[in-house]
Length: 422
Ligand code: HGY
Ligand code: MN
Ligand code: MN
Image 1: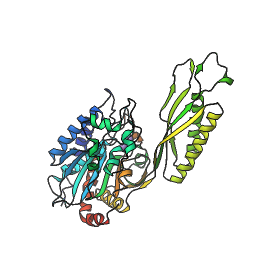
Image 2: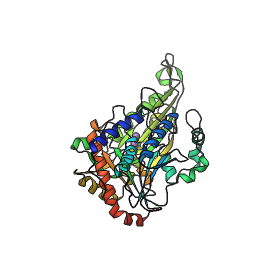
Image 3: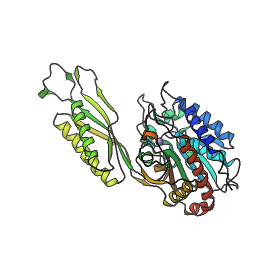
Image 4: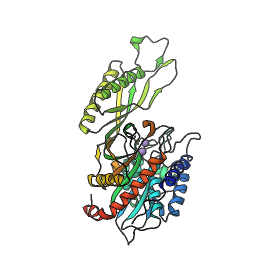
């Protein structure tokens, strides 16, 4: 019988303080910014490795920089449950997005108190989910599912450093990438994550069970006009790249606002030469577009691109774009979602079944394994922000639900494992 009545509240506080300890490892003093295989990731690995080894896990770092802790099962080469989330962050992040799911995974193993299950548990801290350094997300989970392509390895960051070079500078060997693929004995994936939105708080509920993760399009766009003197160039003779982009951004907001569940964001824009007395000749802007229905997202993208072309044409500006991501919506595994639902109930909580508007590694892992996600309430619905938080009692509830999930999985793992999944 798994011990589930440990004084979880202490564990909840421990988990939160551990997330804050990890938050101290940052590339930018004074804020939390930790991108793919940056120097601060070494410190995070050392901290997590010590916590993993303290609870009897063997730890390794794979060729993409995922930290992987294995808690053996009762028998040799048993089926394997993967419990994971990401360790990288957006710039000026909060302390819980991603990290919380890894620290909770270690806490589940800690709560087993040395007891061995009929399946092994591998806790994975993915090296790259946000896509900040190379404008391409999910490098860690793509390596785990064997879907990392050669072009991605050649992507360069703003300093001209490629993915492969960044791996070597971290002390890893890109040639060992095939060994990063998840074990063939893996049969399921659990990701515990903050909701990053307002729903659970609006319902007064601590935990949610994710039914599907919305689809995402990410693009890099360019508007190329003609830089010129701001004082001497009449309005009718301008090719103002920034004015074209500005009109387009308002159109993006209008198109997304007109459709339920559609969200579109231009989160980053740069204008060159960037002087107040010069008409901008070159603008680069990002686009992030999401919806639960892939057809709705595709139609919206077509409209958004037409608006950009129109705003550019009317100013004699050239418009270009490059899609860095076209991620279909991903349903979670219904049987695992039901198991997670039952586990939350056994922990004494009525779960909310919900969509995820945020992307997660689960959407990549789902191509290889049955996946489920447990959401924790986001106070203020706030995330991707330094004030991002989580409630101690919700962390304790998630831990209790996680322990119940392991207990239910003990009864069900054989038929899930025998289902397999290519
Ligand atoms: O952007 C996202 O949806 C996730 O937080 N990486
Ligand atoms: Mn995030
Ligand atoms: Mn995340």
